[in-house]
Length: 156
Picture 1: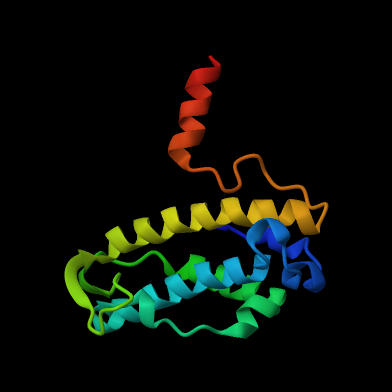
Picture 2: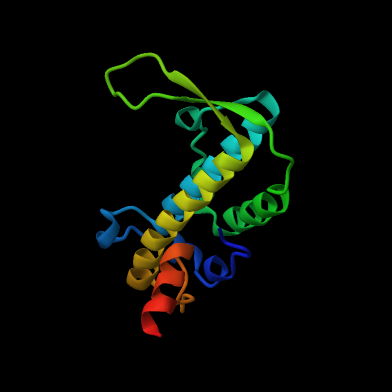
């Protein structure tokens, strides 16, 4: 995840909100919002015992206010270190189904899922950053840890 949102803080608010052709007119802010909302869902689910990413609140201020999003990322990072506990994941992957299903999971498993999902969106954010700005992104930005390790071994 964004350990600290330095890359995000280099963008202007306009760049953060600018639609990117390469992202089907999505914005960097929309991808950042998605990341943040999944972690907020997990945070809330930690206390209720039920995580349902489908029912997350879509907060447009996160996708339009870079400063607000940056502060949320910092807060999320500081709150991740929790004791593992069992949770229930509710989901529905069928557009035609009206009901969700439930499966057992745990906090650590969901953190891993969110981190992997974040890397995927960071790769998309990288594409958006290249289109809307001249921000220099770290080489590892949006690249999975396993891919970085593989590349290191392959270069030798």
